[in-house]
Image (tube, rainbow, N blue to C red; front, side, top):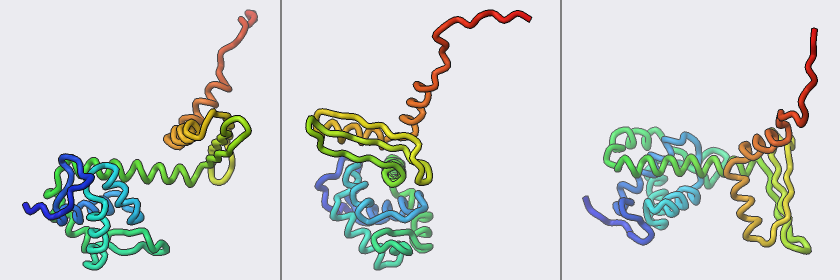
Length: 194
Protein backbone atom coordinates (compact mmCIF):
# COMPACT_ATOMS: atom_id res chain seq x y z
CA UNK A 1 0.00 0.00 0.00
CA UNK A 2 1.26 3.44 -0.90
CA UNK A 3 2.00 5.83 1.97
CA UNK A 4 1.10 9.20 0.51
CA UNK A 5 -0.11 11.24 3.48
CA UNK A 6 1.79 13.52 5.85
CA UNK A 7 2.94 11.69 8.97
CA UNK A 8 3.26 14.64 11.37
CA UNK A 9 1.22 13.97 14.51
CA UNK A 10 0.39 10.39 13.52
CA UNK A 11 1.03 7.78 16.20
CA UNK A 12 2.33 4.30 15.35
CA UNK A 13 -0.55 2.33 13.85
CA UNK A 14 -2.22 5.52 12.59
CA UNK A 15 -3.15 6.16 8.98
CA UNK A 16 -0.63 7.51 6.47
CA UNK A 17 -2.57 6.64 3.32
CA UNK A 18 -5.07 9.17 1.96
CA UNK A 19 -7.54 6.51 0.81
CA UNK A 20 -7.63 5.00 4.30
CA UNK A 21 -8.14 8.44 5.86
CA UNK A 22 -11.12 9.12 3.57
CA UNK A 23 -12.51 5.66 4.33
CA UNK A 24 -12.20 6.23 8.09
CA UNK A 25 -14.03 9.57 7.85
CA UNK A 26 -16.91 7.75 6.11
CA UNK A 27 -16.74 4.89 8.60
CA UNK A 28 -17.08 7.27 11.56
CA UNK A 29 -20.00 9.15 10.02
CA UNK A 30 -21.80 5.90 9.22
CA UNK A 31 -21.13 4.46 12.68
CA UNK A 32 -22.29 7.41 14.77
CA UNK A 33 -25.32 8.10 12.55
CA UNK A 34 -25.49 11.80 13.25
CA UNK A 35 -23.96 14.89 11.67
CA UNK A 36 -20.61 16.02 13.01
CA UNK A 37 -18.60 19.14 12.21
CA UNK A 38 -15.53 18.99 10.03
CA UNK A 39 -13.54 20.67 12.79
CA UNK A 40 -14.58 17.98 15.25
CA UNK A 41 -13.60 15.23 12.81
CA UNK A 42 -10.18 16.82 12.34
CA UNK A 43 -9.68 17.22 16.09
CA UNK A 44 -10.74 13.63 16.72
CA UNK A 45 -8.16 12.29 14.27
CA UNK A 46 -5.49 14.67 15.61
CA UNK A 47 -5.97 14.02 19.33
CA UNK A 48 -6.11 10.28 18.86
CA UNK A 49 -3.05 10.34 16.57
CA UNK A 50 -5.01 8.56 13.85
CA UNK A 51 -4.03 10.84 10.96
CA UNK A 52 -2.51 14.21 10.16
CA UNK A 53 -4.88 17.12 10.89
CA UNK A 54 -4.45 18.71 7.44
CA UNK A 55 -4.83 15.40 5.63
CA UNK A 56 -8.18 14.89 7.34
CA UNK A 57 -9.30 18.36 6.23
CA UNK A 58 -8.37 17.48 2.66
CA UNK A 59 -10.16 14.13 2.97
CA UNK A 60 -13.37 15.91 4.06
CA UNK A 61 -13.12 18.24 1.07
CA UNK A 62 -12.45 15.34 -1.34
CA UNK A 63 -15.32 13.25 0.05
CA UNK A 64 -17.71 16.19 -0.26
CA UNK A 65 -16.68 16.82 -3.87
CA UNK A 66 -17.07 13.12 -4.67
CA UNK A 67 -20.55 12.99 -3.12
CA UNK A 68 -19.64 10.52 -0.37
CA UNK A 69 -20.46 12.98 2.41
CA UNK A 70 -22.50 16.18 2.34
CA UNK A 71 -23.24 19.17 4.54
CA UNK A 72 -26.04 18.32 6.97
CA UNK A 73 -29.36 20.12 6.72
CA UNK A 74 -29.42 23.24 8.85
CA UNK A 75 -25.72 23.17 9.75
CA UNK A 76 -23.27 24.29 7.07
CA UNK A 77 -20.23 22.98 8.96
CA UNK A 78 -21.63 19.57 9.96
CA UNK A 79 -21.37 16.59 7.64
CA UNK A 80 -23.35 13.41 7.15
CA UNK A 81 -22.67 10.37 5.02
CA UNK A 82 -24.50 9.77 1.74
CA UNK A 83 -25.73 6.44 0.36
CA UNK A 84 -22.65 6.37 -1.88
CA UNK A 85 -20.41 6.81 1.17
CA UNK A 86 -22.24 4.02 3.03
CA UNK A 87 -21.74 1.69 0.05
CA UNK A 88 -18.00 2.40 0.10
CA UNK A 89 -17.82 1.66 3.82
CA UNK A 90 -19.71 -1.62 3.39
CA UNK A 91 -17.31 -2.69 0.67
CA UNK A 92 -13.99 -1.48 2.06
CA UNK A 93 -14.27 -1.24 5.87
CA UNK A 94 -12.18 -4.38 6.33
CA UNK A 95 -9.27 -2.56 4.71
CA UNK A 96 -8.99 -0.48 7.89
CA UNK A 97 -7.30 -2.04 10.92
CA UNK A 98 -9.88 -3.12 13.51
CA UNK A 99 -8.04 -1.24 16.27
CA UNK A 100 -8.18 2.00 14.28
CA UNK A 101 -11.92 1.57 13.56
CA UNK A 102 -12.72 0.84 17.19
CA UNK A 103 -10.56 3.66 18.55
CA UNK A 104 -12.08 6.18 16.12
CA UNK A 105 -15.71 5.29 16.84
CA UNK A 106 -15.16 5.10 20.60
CA UNK A 107 -13.48 8.50 20.57
CA UNK A 108 -16.20 10.03 18.38
CA UNK A 109 -18.93 8.81 20.71
CA UNK A 110 -17.04 10.09 23.75
CA UNK A 111 -16.55 13.49 22.10
CA UNK A 112 -20.20 13.76 21.07
CA UNK A 113 -21.32 12.78 24.56
CA UNK A 114 -19.11 15.49 26.03
CA UNK A 115 -20.54 18.09 23.64
CA UNK A 116 -24.10 17.04 24.55
CA UNK A 117 -23.27 17.38 28.25
CA UNK A 118 -21.83 20.85 27.65
CA UNK A 119 -25.04 21.87 25.86
CA UNK A 120 -27.38 20.36 28.44
CA UNK A 121 -25.65 21.52 31.62
CA UNK A 122 -24.26 24.84 32.80
CA UNK A 123 -20.79 25.69 34.06
CA UNK A 124 -19.77 29.26 34.87
CA UNK A 125 -16.33 30.33 36.03
CA UNK A 126 -15.90 33.83 37.43
CA UNK A 127 -12.86 35.58 38.89
CA UNK A 128 -13.37 36.42 42.56
CA UNK A 129 -11.39 38.53 44.98
CA UNK A 130 -9.57 35.45 46.27
CA UNK A 131 -9.46 32.90 43.50
CA UNK A 132 -12.20 31.71 41.21
CA UNK A 133 -15.83 30.77 41.74
CA UNK A 134 -17.16 27.88 39.69
CA UNK A 135 -20.86 27.16 39.47
CA UNK A 136 -21.90 23.76 38.07
CA UNK A 137 -25.59 23.19 37.32
CA UNK A 138 -27.21 19.89 36.46
CA UNK A 139 -30.09 20.58 34.10
CA UNK A 140 -33.01 18.47 32.91
CA UNK A 141 -34.93 19.81 29.91
CA UNK A 142 -34.08 23.37 30.88
CA UNK A 143 -34.97 22.94 34.55
CA UNK A 144 -32.22 23.28 37.12
CA UNK A 145 -31.99 20.14 39.27
CA UNK A 146 -28.94 21.11 41.30
CA UNK A 147 -26.24 23.76 41.41
CA UNK A 148 -22.94 23.43 43.21
CA UNK A 149 -20.74 26.50 43.76
CA UNK A 150 -17.12 26.16 44.74
CA UNK A 151 -14.29 28.56 45.41
CA UNK A 152 -10.93 27.39 44.08
CA UNK A 153 -7.48 28.90 44.19
CA UNK A 154 -6.82 29.48 40.51
CA UNK A 155 -8.18 29.19 36.99
CA UNK A 156 -6.43 25.87 36.41
CA UNK A 157 -8.30 24.30 39.33
CA UNK A 158 -11.54 25.82 38.05
CA UNK A 159 -10.99 24.23 34.63
CA UNK A 160 -10.21 20.90 36.30
CA UNK A 161 -13.47 21.04 38.27
CA UNK A 162 -15.35 21.95 35.09
CA UNK A 163 -13.85 19.03 33.17
CA UNK A 164 -14.57 16.53 35.93
CA UNK A 165 -18.15 17.81 36.23
CA UNK A 166 -18.73 17.57 32.47
CA UNK A 167 -17.24 14.07 32.34
CA UNK A 168 -20.37 12.79 34.11
CA UNK A 169 -22.80 15.35 35.60
CA UNK A 170 -25.37 12.65 36.38
CA UNK A 171 -22.87 10.75 38.55
CA UNK A 172 -22.16 13.91 40.53
CA UNK A 173 -25.89 14.59 40.90
CA UNK A 174 -26.51 11.00 42.04
CA UNK A 175 -23.62 11.16 44.51
CA UNK A 176 -24.85 14.39 46.08
CA UNK A 177 -28.42 13.08 46.34
CA UNK A 178 -27.16 9.89 48.01
CA UNK A 179 -25.10 11.89 50.49
CA UNK A 180 -27.95 14.27 51.28
CA UNK A 181 -30.61 11.57 51.65
CA UNK A 182 -28.54 8.92 53.40
CA UNK A 183 -30.85 6.51 55.29
CA UNK A 184 -28.55 6.01 58.26
CA UNK A 185 -30.38 6.72 61.51
CA UNK A 186 -28.44 8.72 64.12
CA UNK A 187 -30.23 6.96 67.02
CA UNK A 188 -31.71 3.59 67.86
CA UNK A 189 -35.45 3.49 67.34
CA UNK A 190 -37.57 2.41 70.30
CA UNK A 191 -39.04 -1.03 70.19
CA UNK A 192 -42.65 -1.04 69.30
CA UNK A 193 -44.75 -3.76 70.84
CA UNK A 194 -48.14 -4.78 69.61
